[in-house]
Length: 272
Image 1: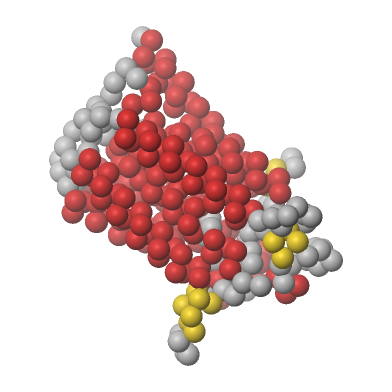
Image 2: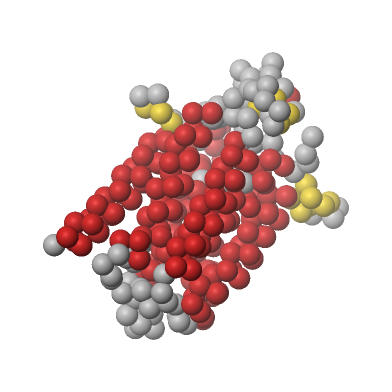
């Protein structure tokens, strides 16, 4: 069985979850620097942006997770601070990131030349999805984010102590973390391919929908949300729901609709 602790230093332990989150940030940072140079944007602004995105992204992700499992944390308020045990909701991170990028763009509009803030969303989209692909393996070591019982060859064993109430008699479960990680990796390569095909000067609106500022971000929003919606049918962790769908599935539906509206609007403007 996996251990959540990567290395024990005595009074301080290095957890796999924190290590993988840190690793994902470091790799994404290097890729983000290259994208900023590709679009001829100031490197110092990227460093500042990363700092704010990490702080508010972690805060937004944790806040969303706590509210999605409010009944649990209402009884254990101190557990809210135990972020090393897992519990970051990507939807909260996405919303927080959008807000940070928007207000940062408004404050530094002159330094960012003539670009729109949608290009910033395009740049950070492959970075966040790569972070998801790497960070999801932290859920494996914490023995969380597993799905319904399965007898498939790739089913993962879960310790009795980590099995959710009502599922104690089952030993092997769907590795939801792996499904989502692989899907995020596919999305990452798709988004990076879009960046490579786009001219460095294509931050200005064009007649091609796929080159429009924001097209990469909204592609990410649609693709990731589609996978998250489908994977949601395998999840067994408790969460608020409505009409047979979990909260995260409803949010995924909303994100998909927002992405579709964006592309419909782009196509409509192109025809005018």
